[in-house]
Length: 258
Image (spheres, rainbow, N blue to C red):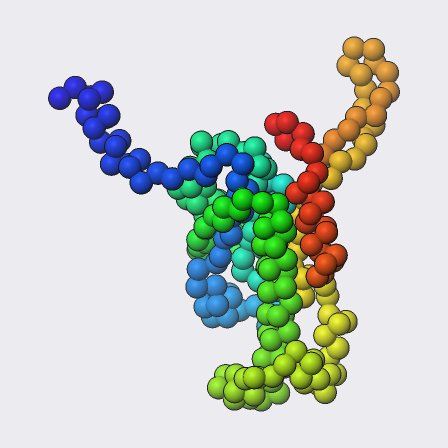
């Protein structure tokens, strides 16, 4: 059998399960760290419930994903997860899901591992969202999940540091309301509202334009050039204000090829 014939015959088995995201659908990728509880507690112990060193690893990994060749409009990270919103007109790899899932998971795993100097692994899945409001809902969901997780984590580790074991701390928190958890922290001298916003709301990443002094290469005249840079936001808004914040990003006209 000639090589071209063999090549065509075998590639069918590679591509038979290929799924592509339809035009006009928003794509949001969510990456999660695999076995990160063990990684961050046993292999590379970090301070609980939050450690700026781990936060900075996640921030740096997210910034790498924003600059690895995809047209990402907005990214968000909290805990050991990263979410990426792609430009609606993104056409890279023909919008094949297997390409996005494999490449993004590989990129995140490699970047995080290099920075940590320990092997780490992420998985990836793509949400296909037909409307911009569902995109807003998605990021509102992850933002509110961050707040719930932060409150629970602070309560749990406050109890642990107060001498309770895993079972005792978990049982103590079972069924407590948000106000009761806040009260538990307050009794230990912790005001949840005063904690850093990045712990309660996560971290956002988006592109911003700015003016930079430049020189016209032909006339040698001083001019002002419009450039784009990545902004990392540690003080995201919350609830309805956050929804409006994401809504503005989704609706903002994009520069072709950006």
